[in-house]
Length: 65
Image (cartoon, rainbow, N blue to C red; front, top):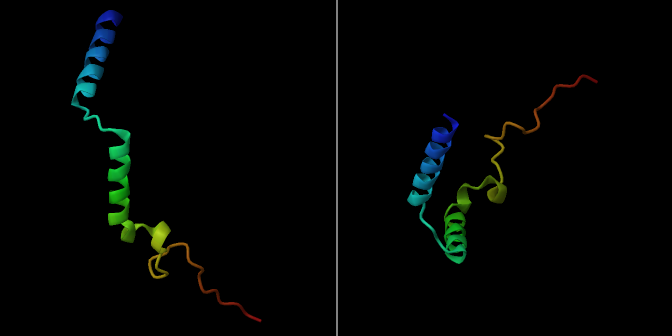
């Protein structure tokens, strides 16, 4: 049973690898750079978070003196 199981697993791995599209590292890096630059407006690490939608903003506390 274990022999047939390992054979099936190996067959599945090869099928998955066959579907992969290989790209040169330099091309992948260039594609990532373009993607990040196109979507920079949606990145809250670059643009900051609006205080109206920030769940971690400081709450107004009522204090009695």
